[in-house]
Image (cartoon, rainbow, N blue to C red; front, side):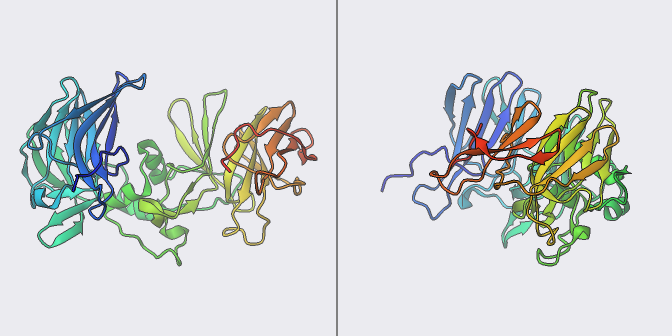
Length: 405
């Protein structure tokens, strides 16, 4: 039978952006062993800024078929750590470490020593200091099968020696384990706003860590099943989906709301945020927290700057607010004090379709598209008057960026 067809649809591939505008795509796999076109690749695709691509192939003793590895750019080299690979090419107890030269496009196999992770894949690698890589998470292949990686490993790039680092190492992340357990979770404010300088939240914002990364650092497990989870079980993060970001004329940046969805590595920490992360031009950070009745949990937030205020719209999540209508909620944020005023604008005459970029500014009106059940429904706009803070009647309207039907 013929072998598998070549495919660009892959899992476990890395894509590394270079300062010169190139992107280096390395290996990965297509589908899994049961598929007739299953293949683990050992190629490199160089993508140029203009869209041109070059394909490079290698002998497998120079670059073995590799997937679910990590790729870390340091200077002119990409360091590749780990691989899942074909079963007959896995070497229990060893860790695959390769170095790729972005100038010559050549691979070099590196022999490491010390207390390494073994045959690891699906992990995370990050640079620490000038000459070290930190490897956390993922799975390790042993003679008995796969086991989760329960340790933190450091590779010294000068000596190529591995060593283990302790969980909660403050040289890696400057928050103690005690403060992690005390401050790790979202919470509601008692004021409008209550300003928080929570050390864990500030460090998470600066490092751009996701909840799963913090759990790996402290060696903590998921504390509760999805059906019983409360905010005390969730790890707070500033890396969110669907947050509203507002850049103000004074240089401050506001990260408003957002959520973590209930799937994947972050599924244990699903949450809809009702806080605001404020970053000053000098890098200072604080978090404004609110009572639920002041800043409800909303999804699909849209905001419009009006003078010193931001008028915000969002769909209320009924899981957090079973007594409220689904929305949209209308809120007015004072960008000076960060106080939020809930606006009683009533219900719009038609359902509003909120999503990023859906709104159009028309003087003192903001026009939103209506929800259409099918392509035959009329495209209408629902205006919101910023002067009277009230909804108007539907108008003929062409959606600026309609969602696919």
